[in-house]
Image 1 (tube, one colour):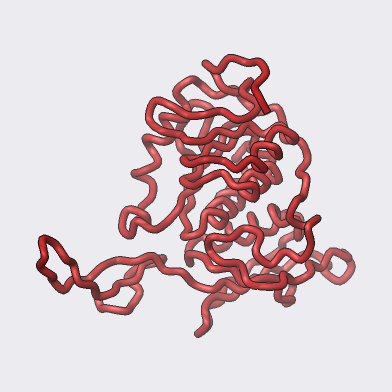
Image 2 (cartoon, rainbow, N blue to C red):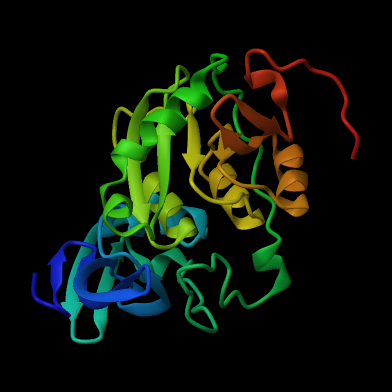
Length: 278
């Protein structure tokens, strides 16, 4: 491994000093790559997102869907071009001039930890997704089974300790798709883009993310029609309000043997129904 050079898609090597018991030793370390991705619709610049340089075709489709910029079935081509400054993601659509839906550019770039950076107006931020479908019923151990299996499906995070993952799981907790990114929103967009492929039924399972369930994460899941979103960390109050409004089952603090259900518990076996405060 040469210091300062990429060693694989999404990984880069850097020299470090490991300090232990008061003694330092020069060593090489693997770090997660974070690159600017210039997203363009039909040649028109829309946003620059900081992201991991993997599964970018999936990212293009998922981003277009969850940002309400263009319907995924209107995409006719995706080109990934590496340039000196980063990566250009060219998304070509059907009849862009006639569609009248040319996306307005974001005001500022989107960072890897930001899902709404650059939105121009409050109505763009606090959007109300349509109601999600009924969805399937999850087995009592489905979330725990998915959580247990996910660690072995995160190779980039295993190497660096710096990436989030988003997984699509069946109703028994089996992992069907996993995507990684340094940004939690990007990982979910990549997963949603991958789920648009034939054979993936959005109603027959749930999404599991290795992050908190912020408002924009819940909004992206609902926009894609995902009925259940489980997160390893906490949700925000606004995310819970959105989930209750649009029918999304929102689960937080997923840990071995326990989790917290914040909305629509009817999709989970072993959870008693009824009213809760708030």
